[in-house]
Length: 84
Image 1 (spheres, rainbow, N blue to C red):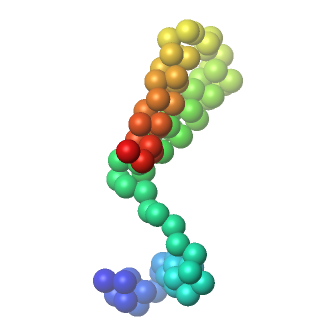
Image 2: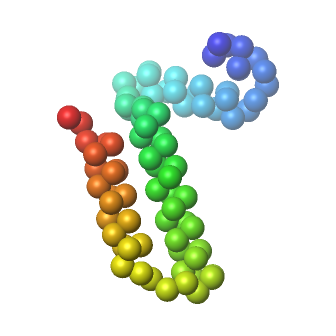
Image 3: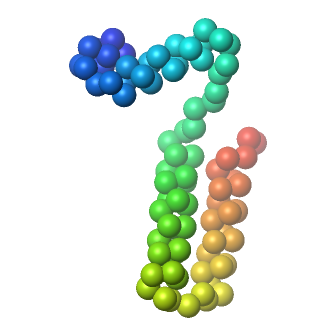
């Protein structure tokens, strides 16, 4: 499938393949994130951006339950990313 994607002409896929090949050649490796980790990252980023937008642009006030929710999100990130 990798060769088929590369032949499709997408420059970003070719660059990704090049970078991954260089990582393998140099011995630098990384552990890819699982689907649950990626979804957690996506949700945290979206909620933080929306929260900043709502406070700065929409002039909504900071409430204690928002802070409690963000504390729970920090706990969620810890649980999802912790190696058990």
